[in-house]
Amino acid sequence: MKKKSFYNVAVVGAGAIGQYHIKSFRKHPAARIVALAETSPERGREVAGRFGIPDLDTDYRDVLRRAEIDIVSIALPNYLHAPVALAALQAGKHVMLDKPMATNARDAAKLVAEAKRHRRLLMIGQNQRFAPTVQTLKQLVDRGALGEVYHAKAAWLRRSGIPRIGSWFTQKQFAGGGCTYDIGVHVLDQTLYLMGEFEAAAVSAQTYAKFGPRGQGDGSWGKSEIDPRKPFDVDDFSVALIKLRSGRTVLLEASWAAHQRVQSSNGTQLFGTAAGATTHPPRLFRPGRKKYTVEPLPSLPPLVSPDRMVHFINVLLGREQPFVRPEESLAVQKILDAIYLSAATGREVRLR
Ligand SMILES: NC(=O)c1ccc[n+]([C@@H]2O[C@H](COP(=O)([O-])OP(=O)(O)OC[C@H]3O[C@@H](n4cnc5c(N)ncnc54)[C@H](O)[C@@H]3O)[C@@H](O)[C@H]2O)c1
Image (cartoon, rainbow, N blue to C red; front, top):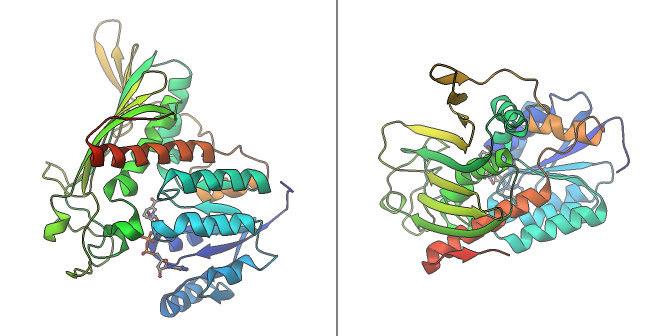
């Protein structure tokens, strides 16, 4: 990768997350947002105007043709992630792609191969693992403070948090999957990162849709577009037992809607031979000299910038090493595929 002193960024998709991408890249003095591609002309004009972005297109391919653009940052509905990222890599751009990487592992593998072939940076927006507490816990795990970490619980459970019922989020043809793709992916990625192992050997899972099809469990991510012609055909709850290649295990739970005591709970719990730990709240628990102790995590300097876009630019500048590697995101995608396959077939899915 040839280093430059500043990078021109084009953002594709100006929804809530696209606007977050814009704000985030603007924090780095070596990044300049020069273009926005958005199919809705009104939204495009409003967002480009608000952030002073000089070039606005409705067709993302116009952005890819422009030689001065170095980075394409993708914040689109899930079914467009892989095709747009592939086209951007083929056009020689570095790609920041929001999660999930794709809607199947075959497409995700193509992205990994294409990034390698063109020697371009490809990173998936797994922002949870950038959190300072997660970076601290990772350092404790790697220093052996927990002993052997043999099991983890990963959960993101919302009581009522379906994003926009009736929108692309709740239709399989556009989203690929429901809460497992939307929030399960975050805690799964975070947990595998903490365990230092991404490749799974077997997955046994079940998915449910108990609230969304009845128009219940709506969340606060924009306005629902309830329309009987748009079926709710994704999961609003899922559970999976994941056996890693080493034999260690992860229990993953995700829900957009479920009866539970709190509105939302989210995090990883690690079970080690010397200690246990949670990310939310950030605590370490282990036997002390006199009694069992539960302590806050110490404060350690982060490994990389906690902002994923700032980190992305730092990697291009040669200041930081890639924190989310595409091969890891591909392994996560394979587990997501296996969760849906196991739920559909009623069987454990073995992964090579
Ligand atoms: N990392 C995170 O924490 C996080 C959080 C929420 C959402 N996301 C992900 O971000 C992505 C976007 O989510 P969102 O909530 O912003 O969705 P959104 O529906 O609000 O925004 C998507 C935007 O893309 C535009 N669009 C659609 N097709 C297009 C095309 N071909 N070319 C250009 N623009 C097009 C739409 O008009 C819309 O403005 C999703 O994949 C979601 O999973 C990530």
